[in-house]
Image (cartoon, rainbow, N blue to C red; front, side, top):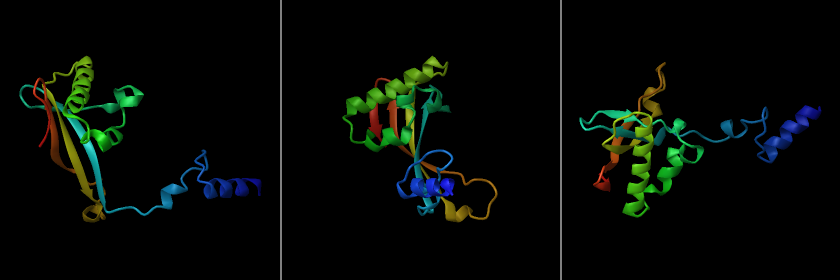
Length: 137
């Protein structure tokens, strides 16, 4: 009985404490259209390499949070963010000429009955090339 009361209290006050997490997981409706962001470096030949944010310091790992304010930054600050990402990828041994940031979209309704996860469509949003600054496409 004590565990049941604990479960109810965690749900009522939105306390996310393992193993009583997941209350919100099933209490919010899911949307059919999912939007996100992907960032890639590119080399002199145009070959892209996905930026592995999981290898970055904790403060720089969350691309969706960064992109919430990226478009509102002054151009010099946008360029500084791209240069920092490029420098970090260079430190991993990747040849980098610039950074491309894509907006992704997945329509889950189109893929409801398929076994494999739907593939995201991507649209180029920003390009940051060395020495040329960041620009919206």
